[in-house]
Length: 474
Image: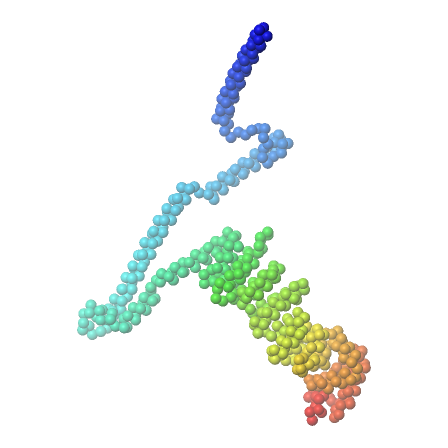
């Protein structure tokens, strides 16, 4: 029993202590709540000093100079934001006032338009009356003016005059609406250019009604912007949008814009875009457009084959067969070029000589100077060799002479007899060239064959009409 009493006494002591501590805790909570309420009231925007200051390191946050500098920065930023808000933003009430003012102005405009239409009708009526009065005064005035007006209104002449007046003065609502749309389109385009929204401006111009913004003037606006670092080239954006929408119109983009677009694409190393534009027939082909691509291919050896193929497409479409043939040769499509020559039988010897000057390939010269599909050669080998030496293509000419020399005298004789295009004087020039370039035997063979021909005599330099094959036809 004694132990029980002891334990009960300890429990009462503990409970009393617990109650006292609990009361102290409640009192401290109440005091803290009152203190915090007072702090919030007087220091609404104060921050916890234990937290770091944004934009400053711990070392800077305890440095007075750094704190002063940071405070100055924050004050400047606050003043800038305050100024920006006063310039760029307006209150919702101000917007409501402006909307109301706009509504009133639109109503006034509608009233003015209605009044204008009524005045136009009155004006037309006054013109009719004036016309009638003038005609009545010129008449014998046998009838009253009112009867005269009724009579003249029934005549064909009056109706014709009235129709002319109405045609001149009538304000067609559909045309006025269209003009308003076009004006709005141009204003919106200029606004996008001013705001620097070049991508949107390009699409806007490409989809303009009646293609009013698809012209050189619009292109010059994009060109004047120049290149912007880190952003697409505005001029290229314009041409991309322009050519991508060309199928939506009845005719493709005109030749001048086509050339400028190709130049822009190639200057930006976007041959892929040019290929897409050409193959999708979104352009107006012209000789200048083909020349631009051809010249680019001559400079860019890596993409030369692609450029020559594109140029050949354009030249074909334009009917420029000489340049199309040159592109085929540049591509190495010699057999295709020969078929092209056979298809378009308009190539002269001068055209083919010009071709081998621009594309001096041995295989091409062989094909031109030999029979092709049972048809006679298109060009004389001797004339080709002489031409090569005359245009500073001596290396190619020497290779051809070496091949001729390998065949021996019989091959040379066969070549000379089977060549109806080359005169005696030309063969003498050939012999001299062979002699000058170390082909003594070939030179002697040519001269020997010339002297051995029946009826052949030495000719003067003035007589260039003599042909080696003259004795055959006689």
